[in-house]
Length: 582
Image 1 (spheres, rainbow, N blue to C red):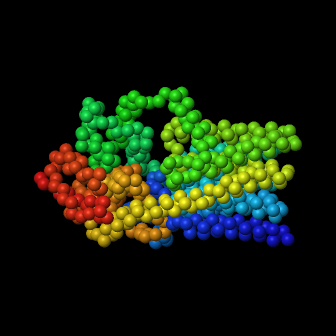
Image 2 (cartoon, rainbow, N blue to C red):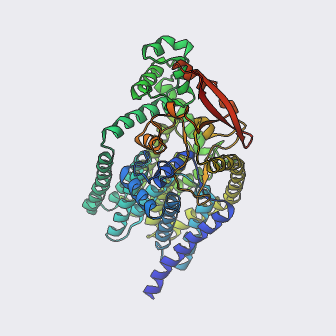
């Protein structure tokens, strides 16, 4: 009987996970959500340099080196896509298994399984289809926190799995893991408060988490210890500061500054259109200088207290505002995430207020309040910095929802009825939003099909002319038209081609990296500046990006050029041949 019971604890969560996979697959194709994931995939697969590369810049070295190694064995597979999807559905299984096995009686198990199933479809739904590594990391961190909150017995197996999930999440996207780590800390602290005699167990868990992160960081630094990568990392940090947090000052109004750092108007234009890869003289010092100057020139910088006040108003609005999603990301809405979070906060607070044991009551109430204080701090931080897309906000919601659910399941051991109200409430909220969620997926798929029609045609054009090489204007690679079309992304598991690609961007976050120079070298080029003037090399732009900036740049370098449009692709992309007229 016991074996049958354990078997059900495995079979039902597995079937539930399979059900989520099948249903979301029926409503949409799997996509890399953003172009960042696509470039990371190209680097890892060997499509960028011709050889699977362990340095994919955005992820820490140990995990990217491992993925690149797997690509070397399975060259024709979309390994990175499989990796991200597998991690997400692994998290679904872990959460389902833990929640399902938390109860012994059949009614409680059915309610719990239904709650998890509906939550995955009605709340997370679209993230299973439009996959992004930042959200995946948040999902892994939330799953680790759920294991910590709900473990039984000595919890050794669960603690080991939690440490593995957190360490792996750190390797994949360190910034996102560190953002969610305070809530993991709240989960550890809450469990310790309720089991103070097990201090050393939770202390060791914390030590192992810190050790996993520290070892990962050391291995990453070793992997990027060469002088070339150190130099590029400095450039990468400067680029991030300039493009993510500052702006490019107008040339005419700031000519004296640009003259002082030796940057001409044509070179400044390369920073504006992000195509600075063509100019080898633009380096980390250049970007840092522009970023620091731009920071000092800001006249509309909001004072801290004023920013905090405005951010608090926005935070409270998002906490209570309820509406159906109109589209996948913008305009943003937090429902049903905020509904579920508020329901769980209220029910967890009430449940612990009703606890018979005074110590458990005080510890539970304090843990709920501490969690809310932690989430408030994190939310104000991201809102004040203007960094609150759904790939960041939804994982934060997921973190607190899983921790609160863990608190409720923990207390339900004393009375099962405590769990019924929140589980049913979460199920109903998720169920109500399922039609909206799949409507959003359907609409987003239709929009991305329009986008893919353009970019598939462009990639087919590249493939049909493999003897030629193409440099793409950066903003052309991001969006084909300026008429509300979706930004560039790729379907997973479709049109997989891991051969060395005969095209590259003229800028972006991988520009001027050792990988970038490896790609140029693979085609016999020493620099983009010289390559563009070579036979068989072309430049691709869209109409709104123009091409005059390119002739202006070469003229500034003392080279007269002739630009000839030789082809048009999908009615939106223009292919130019640039020749020297000197």
